[in-house]
Length: 72
Image (cartoon, rainbow, N blue to C red):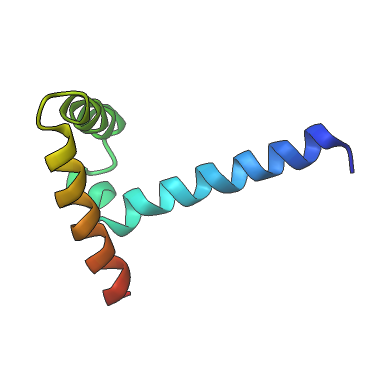
């Protein structure tokens, strides 16, 4: 298999895993699969992470995420 094929498969796997997180969090159902709303929320999240409260938000969200992974 060529290098570019391996890299493409790794990228595809990564993107699928990220999409799975959106589903696992219930975002798809809560937004009615409205991709503009989902993207808007992600942009809001990026803005928050770039703000002066970014580190606090990151810590809170990371803890909430760890708890969700532990629950299964």
